[in-house]
Amino acid sequence: EDQVTQSPEALRLQEGESSSLNCSYTVSGLRGLFWYRQDPGKGPEFLFTLYSAGEEKEKERLKATLTKKESFLHITAPKPEDSATYLCAVPTSGGGADGLTFGKGTHLIIQP
Amino acid sequence: DSGVTQTPKHLITATGQRVTLRCSPRSGDLSVYWYQQSLDQGLQFLIQYYNGEERAKGNILERFSAQQFPDLHSELNLSSLELGDSALYFCASSVGGWGTEAFFGQGTRLTVV
Image (cartoon, rainbow over all chains, first blue to last red; front, top):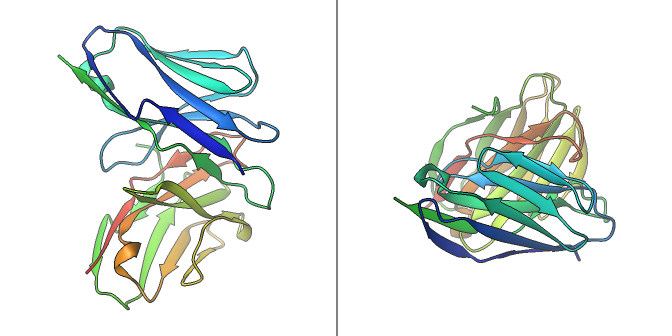
């Protein structure tokens, strides 16, 4: 069964304090790993797709990296507007399903 | 704005009732996905349609059904509603399958009382 586990569940940082969020996955035949940002009461907003171990992608203060078993979302010098829940997901493998299996997310709070 | 439109934004209904949620995908996107998000379960994949045809099913209850019309908009029908069906329902669309970027709508918040 495909599994996606995110840690920590919640993280509170001071503005400017860099950190990393973790996403561990167990799938047979990775077809990509996706990162989304979700604000309260809103739909997830696409951030990155990573396809192979060693791949990195950056967007403003965010950088996503991928290994064979996990992905990291590094946040450098975060600002309060980076506060959100960050979700990672992998395409469901097998069984005819073609959706995404999401982790439960990391709730990130950046304090000014 | 993702370009995916969902209506209504909020819906309050009684147990046992039936409701229809509507989704208009981004222009050019052929795939539509429906997701349910509750506090304890997180985001759960329900069903996917591609160019009018059902392509994949996830954890969708038999009381729920969906369809995609020739103009590519989609509807999710929820019947015999129970208190536990209260959740946010999201629609997402993409050009193809999940190898391409998927964009989510703002969701419909369903409250069953």
